[in-house]
Length: 114
Length: 114
DNA sequence: TCAGTTGCGCAACCATACGTTGCATTGTCA
DNA sequence: TGACAATGCAACGTATGGTTGCGCAACTGA
Image (cartoon, rainbow over all chains, first blue to last red; front, side):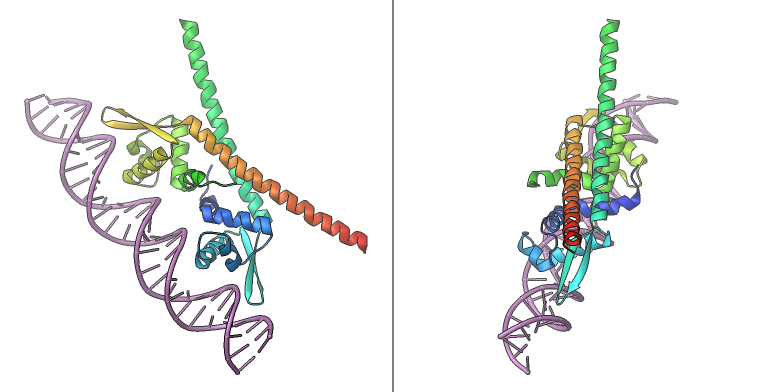
């Protein structure tokens, strides 16, 4: 069900700062480490490291523009990640529902027997 | 959009080992640190630490049974977590769709103008 | 009953990840 | 060219996920 490959994706979006970076990039279209760090409670260097991580798993891409390095989300990859999240959420939900209905069936059987 | 409270939940389920623990507990109904460590490539102590984390955010609960300590998932809390995941996934997805349709509209406008 | 196993908890330790500060490097522009 | 602004690199501190080793409590059975 869960593969080792996906662990990279999970750990990438598991960090709250990285999720906020993705949100920011999504909202503003693009950003550099400097501009992004201005909107987050962390330093530019921390942002840089996170962007490297996000880049490594393919969630963002960068383009040099003069002396700055602009990042933007890779929409295809983020869509994949979003699907992953929804999928795991749905899986858990369905399992929980099955467990619940099972428990209710047992209750039913008990009270009938009595 | 994202609150600090939820960060705990995310970091709890962000770890691959903890996700697998949840999967196992969900599949088998219950388990102790010892039995669970038998099904994972980590030691009992590592499992114990993870269970403590999961307990702290309320995703699992424990019940002492003689000398063993049995854990089981808190279904309500896991349902909340599952909803969170699906929700974030859906949010990203809708934003991506909006961006895409926006881009297409611009393309449309360009070619019309020409 | 008491000796041996079994399950837990605690402490020390190592590696990696996230964050900081400080400094060097490079590109822009007046 | 000189000054500023953005990036990159390195050292460091702390937290976390993992290990091993040990001690203790609680079952088990001869």
